[in-house]
Length: 415
Image (cartoon, rainbow, N blue to C red; front, side, top):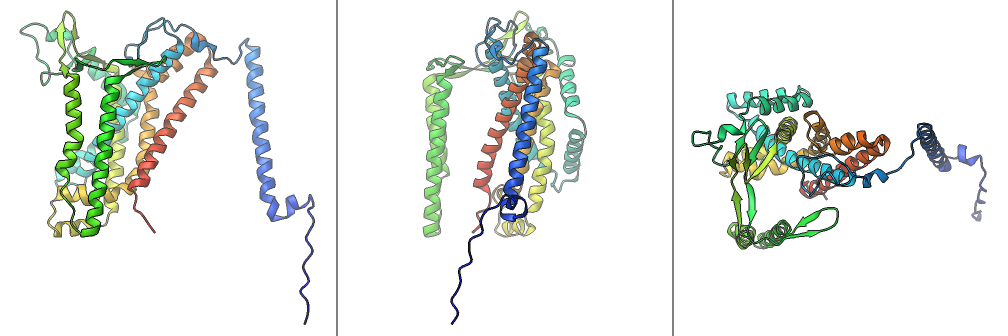
């Protein structure tokens, strides 16, 4: 019987870094990393040398300097004596506002148009096709300029609404003029005040509404989870719609009643509307153009997602007696979400980044403040552009992360 002889261990040699497949990949990665660091160091050194030749340095101290310019729309307190840092915050808030409102309207428009494109009504389906093709095949900048021209040239002056013979408000609440759109404001008689955090104040009344709404939605989710457990155990799902309605609506209504929330309808006073909120036409044009443009792409995504669901699902729902509307909302769309969500994330990111085109109509968002007036006043091109890139990168990563979490919750669970 032969004894097994243990093979002696092979000693490490430098040539193994190239010829041994166990170490070759590590060698290649180290070489690539060294090249990347060398190129980055060369770029930074070259940039510093060029800045020094121009008599400049790399410094963010300009953010604490007085801005000296005005911003028409601002969600946080700001004056001409404020710093460039506060101007940056105002521009960032305007960017986030247009991004959130644009994504919301684009989603509603996209879902509605995507569903209607599959309608059996020939005229409705063709009209939706015309809308999608028109907006998809014309640059977004042209749509922004077109909407801005319509608002500023085709709308009446605020003085038209003055006097007993003047024009009435739209639905008694809105007034579209050639300078702004007057909309109702929300008045609070017994608010909770605000908390100053230094850079910006926090409205405690709004915070209370958000907290109550979040708690109500959490309780509602627990109720639905309990109902699902009962259904899994007994086969019968208890009726929960009226409980869900009470949980979500009743606490919010009580809070709004305690705070004395009411609408402040705009009224013409002199040459301008007062009492409500005067939204600049630049914001309205940018919001509508971004929403309708992105909505056309979302409509195609929704249509593709619906077509990806097997026709047998619809036929089975109809056989159970469900109407077409209920079939779409309860059977088709929930299954289509797993196809819709991933490309929808890209559309939200595109809308957010396209909001930088606001400079074309004079709307001061992040691009208009930090990348426009601040950059021109201070001459800090490199610092301003780097800051804008980092901020847009952070916003995009947050949107992508949130939507990926939602996507992981709605996708089909596989074993």
